[in-house]
Length: 102
Image (cartoon, rainbow, N blue to C red; front, side, top):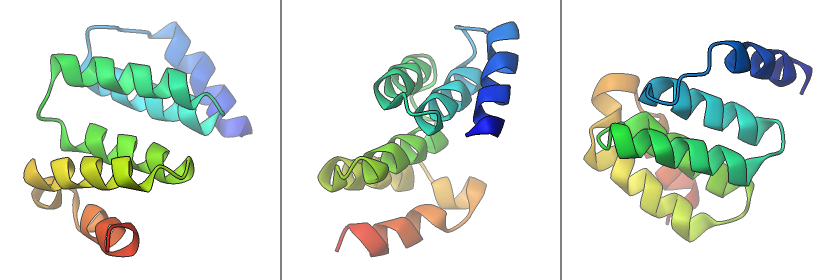
């Protein structure tokens, strides 16, 4: 948790609500700090700017998994796959789908 708090202080210094990559990363960090709802809002804002960001859908799925929302997680994993997560980032989304969506 300590590293996420340090990261949060840096995120606050460089805050950019127009950068979808920033918003996605900031949102996932917020979740890791225990603020899932706030994290989801930032990630959703990132998707408003860059709707084809497969990593944002992966992050949403991870939050859903952590919160026990498996049906929603599987929807987000499916979307990440449709947006070619594998090509850009590897097999993680496929592995999560096998583990949680069967």
